[in-house]
Amino acid sequence: MNTITQPNPDDDSEEMLMLPPPEVGTHYLGSTPQAVPGMFWEIVLQIGGEGNPPVHLEIGYYSVIGRGDPSEGYIPQIDFTAFGAKDFGISRRHATLTPDAEGLLLCDLNSLNGTFVNGVSLQANEPRRLQPGDEIRFGSLRMIIRNLRPVGLSQTSLL
Image (cartoon, rainbow, N blue to C red):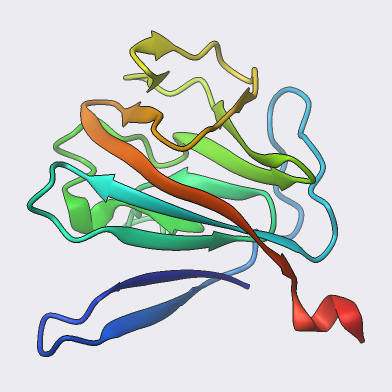
């Protein structure tokens, strides 16, 4: 499973949230980059500004980025609803992150308000490799990649 770590507001510890696996039978437009089985990458994002605590994500498979929609019962694997996603113009199915042997690929899913890396708009369904220091913008929500590193193989891939 993908995981997200964020500070626990009640104390100085971090809270680990497990993200659900991709939906079975989901079809996506364009070519889908294939993940390396069992390969995980950690990405640390500074969302909104230096005053906000960093968000840690561990990505091990093709993951949809977006915002949840309670009326449809939809929650993407990486959900920015808690960051005001709707107000920032983030689509329900906005973009994807896919791990491979070299890092993470970001791909816009033909979102209404666009996905940008370092100020350059991504073309729909055209993957872009991410690097530490890149500025990502989903709609108008800005974030900086503070760290991007491999965390190796999952324990289940070793069985």
